[in-house]
Length: 70
Image 1 (tube, rainbow, N blue to C red):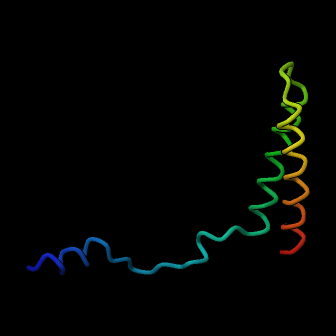
Image 2: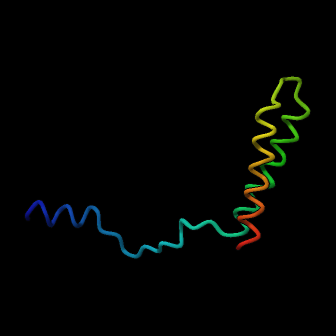
């Protein structure tokens, strides 16, 4: 058996859907919910997370905009 034929068998896929890797609206909402919990934990923490909190709040605005377009 030739090397080329062996390689084809090793890397062949039966059926691949490009939609598998797409984020759905539900996925974005899941991400947002978990980031909200993380933000709450950061705000309750005794550590100084001011910069990270501000960046996360800006990210929420971007994420909400992306969710609203779906």
